[in-house]
Length: 444
Image (tube, rainbow, N blue to C red; front, side, top):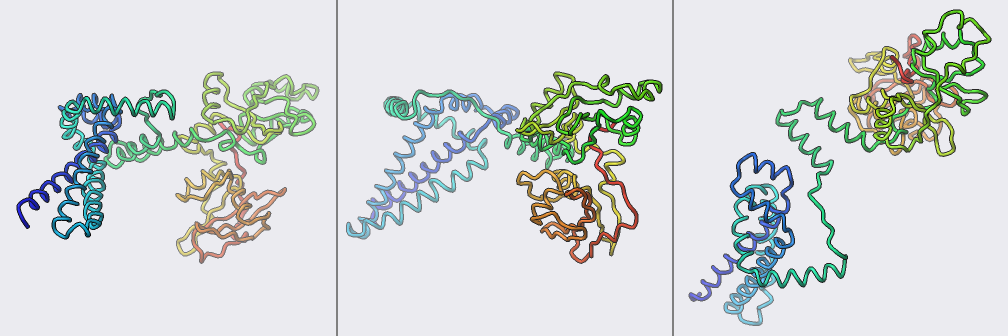
């Protein structure tokens, strides 16, 4: 090969390298976010102000980089075509496709952009000054191209909409997980952050106590019987109905009745209406975070949840909402819903409340049963089985086996759970009755 070919080959390598430089600068600069800029400030990066200035005019920056990159790409293609023609003749000029394209794609695009995305702060710090200098040198050409591009953009999508840097949920979660891995946050703190974001996407229907576990009171019940019910259940608030359970006329708070003298309690003519408070109704599709703010601002702590037809579908209190962030707050009775009742070959079998929330189950056992709009463990079993299962029915899942041990009024009350396929589950494993009634109506 003569000297001209060697010179052209060297020029081709330089142009491919420049293509990689400009491609990586685009990725590095535009991938910087507020947290990266704060990191540069913390590191006293001398190019921080220049980087901020470049990013403050994103269209100027992108036009500069694209002009430079297109110039070197076209030039490198011309040079490689010239080399091939000199070596093999014009009839083999098509070989340029197999030389220029792979070289530019591998060394001018993919590799430099991948590296720049991984080390965006380092790349941006080095490339900011050359990009700024080149932008000044091509000012006339850049101004003309930008003017034409602005006019075309305005014709297609309308006037420019200003927007600032957006911090997304995923960005904060990523930072939280990185902080946890580096020991800045412990596991529980990182878990709280995750649960706060999950809470922001939940509705009241996702966190409420379902109707099947609510303890209703009737206006026909004497005060003495009502007081006994309060003491037996240890609930804080009770919906009170007249006629049917969908005709709730008020809410009785236990504290309002516990302080009443025995004379009033024994007076059968004393109506319960005098102790009732106006019920606060919320739709089940109301965002849980909105209800949390409502509770804060109005000093309420209890609400009845209604469906689109006005029927009572559940109740929700402040403890239910806080439990979504800090974890379920269990009392002695609710803890009974998950107790170790048998040990076979060192493997455990658990007895569970059918009304246990599916999120609680997943969190307790470290599994991920798919919700698909289902809120309770019983609802999940019904969905898997396709019909109301009989006692001793085994329901197989990829995360364990369930055995139905108690069914009442067309609902699953209790069931057994084990992850071991070799354990024979049966209602006979219950040697003694256990009170696993959910007590999440609002306990002290």
